[in-house]
Length: 299
Image (cartoon, rainbow, N blue to C red; front, side, top):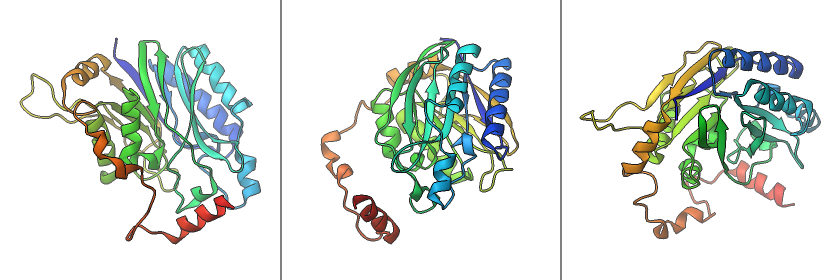
């Protein structure tokens, strides 16, 4: 498999959904001109990560999976022969969801992933969470690769990445909308290292409130036979400004590495992990707002 070119569309929203649609298509075309095989958007691109307090206003920003906004990128993926990961505030009941729709190079929908770990301590308490993580055999112009997704806060839970690894993911696409500083970047580096897969994260640029760019690609390969020690798995870290940031992922190198190294699934002891599925929360992790939110959803 030739090296896979991943374009991170680190771009600022326009303030309107129609403007975002036009700008998004423009940047997809630019990415294709630069040789991209995959184009990834930052989190909730259709509305520029807006989550109003008023539920009626919130729902008015949400779009349907079968609507014009999403279908435009479905058709564009087919036209450009390029994979597109388009992100939306998705129409859903009782509340909208934070979602990525992944289209292969033929415009075929590979999965609809809704953010599982919503930030319930902030505005995302007004969104519904997703139910599962998905992996697809993604058809790119360079060949088939197994791809899954996390969204922003998902990366802070090692379980998210571990499930994707267990389902076979070789590449994880991560739309994002927050400041990417040393600790969050370290989380991504750790997730790639311990699961032996690549992670591509697309953030908003510094122009967007509470964001700072620094979109990244980690290739997940920590050791090579010709090196005496470990290598930095970060093959791309963007600056703060708006732009298309391109990384070349050596999929063949990653696959050879996954066949031999000790991380991932070879030496786990899952029979000893029962506590991971327990739902009780003990001090010091009790949060009143989370308890109230759970009660409201049960009513």
